[in-house]
Length: 411
Image (spheres, rainbow, N blue to C red):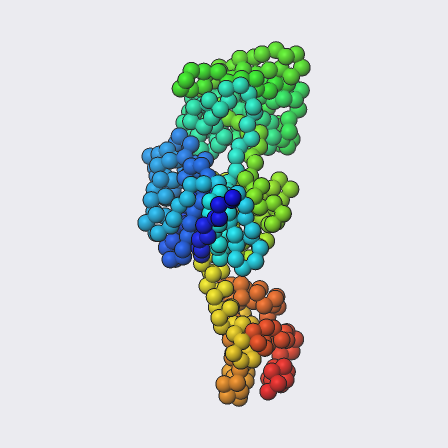
């Protein structure tokens, strides 16, 4: 007999414990929202594997990633955030109440913040797992370039990211050897990047090759063995570090078919980290964005934490006040920076006075947020919405007058 899952209610459920998820947790916890962060593997995410982080503001001594993310975790705990180390099995994100299920628990949430990050595509070469991250194989030139000053590094890949990151590495490394699986002179990057790379004296290319194996001792990588895809020849290349730039896979399988994604399965968001579903946000490397760094992940998390708080507050206001059912309702939606809209507030006030308490009047200013207006389906301002029994009766948007509004309210 299947065990019945324990049901818990939260204001915010955060899926993923990297810097983006941790920052969202800090902001949500500080707003006194009941918050839980669920992480299946390691709190801190991929950032914990970074040996030195020299570009995160406020940490000039370039600490390990784990040192920074541990501070984030401690801060979130002080804000009252709950943590659960387990995998999320399924989610139901539509509707006012979101459902996040793990093996033993079912979490019901007002909002969900997706912070599941992604994983680097790897070569599949022999012994690769042995040297991942801080043992010789890296995935971020911005993070680890300085640590490779005056060293020989290998770059795997020839796409735009690989060549651009390889060029960046030449500012630090003494030599950058690039493994390209195509014939000499052919790359997957744009022509401008290719020409610049081939003209760079610090860059050398090994054509028609893929990785066969990674060799070294128990502590660190020493040699990458390439295989010529045409001749089968094995080519050992000694190095100090190897950077793999052959793609990144966002961890979005759980959410497919529920929220809007790009063709590469990144989550689409707006500047408030909102996804295509109300109350669902996405942050960090899982979302479509230009720069994936700890600093940008933290920014995403801060925005989502604030946006989740705003969404919950708007929901409570909308249900309890805007869509009240005790009286017929008059809702005036306007933009405070529009002089005519402000002036029309006097007419709304007169209608309210003339009604002598027979109607409930609400005023919604969209200057800072269109959240409540969006819930009413209002896209142009000013507008008037009338309600009856807690439901929308009429929407007036053209040539608002005292007479037209009173007529809609049967006054």
